[in-house]
Structure formats: structure tokens, C-alpha cells
Amino acid sequence: MKTRHFLTLNDLSVEELQNIINNAIAGKLRLHAGQTVQTLKGRVLAMVFEKSSTRTRVSFETGMAQLGGHAIYLSPEGTQLGRGEPLEDTARVLSNMVDCIMIRTFAHEKVVRFAEFSRVPVINGLSDTYHPCQILADMQTYVEHRGSIKGKTVAWLGDGNNMCHSYINAAWMLDFKLNIACPEAYCPDQTILRTASNHAELFNEPCSAVKEADLVVTDVWASMGQEQEMAERQAVFAPYQVNRELMTHAKRDALFMHCLPAHRGQEVTADVIDGQQSVVWDEAGNRLHSQKALLEFLLL
Image 1 (cartoon, rainbow, N blue to C red):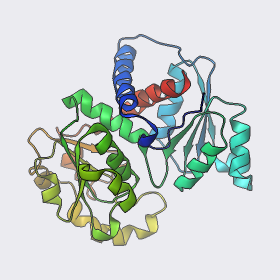
Image 2 (image 1 turned 90 degrees about the vertical axis):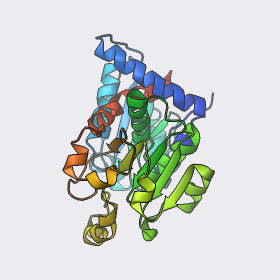
Image 3 (image 1 turned 30 degrees about the vertical axis):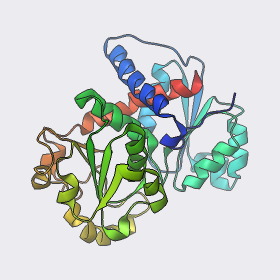
């Protein structure tokens, strides 16, 4: 059987994506009911981090422990990757020792190349182009609070970044409308945008994108590796801040999400992220449950 990888949402069929979301919800309910399962007993996950992490590391490490397996944290400084070992060689070696590999890195091409030489499933824990694990958690969170996202309207505000790209993938797969409001110079990749067909649309003005939205989502204005651009980005993205006034243009019961970490007073105001419409903390916690379901899908 061909090894399955999870580099983008497109590596799943629509049915598989929906099953992972449903299994994540079911697994969460079992855990909260005190029921434990050891479906991955004896399995080992290698976690390769070239970017710092809180939620990704803790959720994967905890998930493997709860499922009876084990996770190994690997950084460039503590491995031969940091001394120039070819990526292909590391992939060959690790995949002969572990059952699954998660990579959190910069260039998406690294994840793709790693998967090409791996004998075991490779998971994209984040790259500069996509963040598919976060989208699993976001979709789980929406379903838990509002039911199916099919036919709903999601507004994305800010940078057309890796999160935006993964939302574009989700839009056509789960059949919702994605309104993207971003400055012209920070629009999402046009090739990725075209894959969504009529499920995604660009807006220059935030209020128009948010109008009657069921879900409003944003992210930091400067991602890891872009810190030197912060001053410039703050000026450009200021009109795209998600604040209380902007949320009044969405539906009254609209939800707010943010993948974290957040900068209150920049991309979102405190009264929104800490307000009643925010499901950010459920969203963050669901990284654990959605990734457990993903690991089971890839390994069982």
C-alpha cells in the first residue's frame, strides 16, 4: 500500500476530511468521559522543528501519549540537519526508525522533498505555504459550535498567508464561501486561489468581506521570519483589524477564530478575542483532538 502523507488538505478526499473531523469530535467526547484508547501503542512519532512552537509540539506530543505511543522532539541544533546532512538522508534514516514524521519548517518544498524520501507518513505541521493541521482544528471547532459549515460564509482578514491558503483548500472541499480581504500586495497565491473556483473571492474592503459572515478569521500581521517587516506591515494592515465595529457587519451569531499567538491591539482587539463570539480557546484545544484523529487515519 502506498504511504499516505498529509502535506495539504488536498492529500485527503472530501469524505476522508469529513471523517477525520467527525472522529476528532468523537475522540474528544470519549476523552472527556474518561475513556482511554491505546490505538497507537508502540508507535513512535518524530517531530522535526525548524520553527518554534507551542500548540503544535504540545498537541502532537500529548496526542501520541494519550493514544499509547511516543513522540520524539528533534531540532536542527540537536540533529545532523543542523550540520548540513541532506534532507533526503535524514528522511531515509528517520523513516527506518519511526512510524510517522511531523515537520514544522519554512519552505514548503522541504516538506514535499522530505515526503518523497520517507517510507512512513509525513505530516506538515506548518510551512510558509500551508498550515493544514490548524484547519482541521478550525473545522472541528465550527462543527462543534454551529454544525456543518457547508453553505456558510467565512471571512478571512489580513495576510494571504499559509493559513489563508489552507482555508482556500477547505472552502472547495467543504463547500463554503470564503471572502478574503487583504491589501493588494499581500494577496494569496493566485494558483492556489484558482483551485477554489467560485468558492473564494477577494475583497479590498474589510466590511464587504465580513458582511453576513458566519465565521470571521484572522492571523498575525507578521509571521515567523517576517519580524523585520513589522513596522511596514502594521501600517498596511491597520484597516484590516478585527474589532467590535467590524464584527457588527457579520451575522449576530458569527464566530471568531485565530490560530494564535495573537497580538491584541494589532490584528484583533481584546474585546473580540476575549469576547463571547470568540471560540479561540476551543480552537486551540482542538489541535489535540483533530491531530489524534489524523494520526489514527495515517497509521491504522
